[in-house]
Amino acid sequence: MKKLTTLSVCFIIILLTYSCAVRKSSECQDKCNLKPETGFCKAAIPKYYFNNKTGKCEQFTWGGCEGVVPFQTMEECKECKCKKVK
Image (cartoon, rainbow, N blue to C red; front, side, top):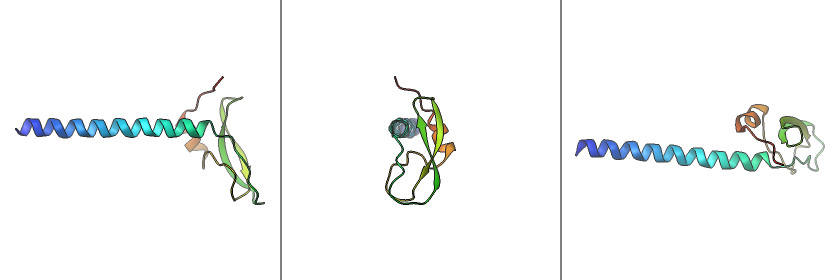
């Protein structure tokens, strides 16, 4: 009985880990496809996006409100391991 409980707990942990990884991968791909938009405000805040033409994470200047900011940091963009889409 104890063995069955241990196996059940291990199975649940593996299942949860897998579902979290799949969700993160899906969220990353969505962010990879976003086109950056500066927005209407006049601040000059560095933010990041995946440039599908160059296949690299790049910086753009966000105005500070509205607009589209795919990634907050360069590290976040690189962690997603975005791939060029034809």
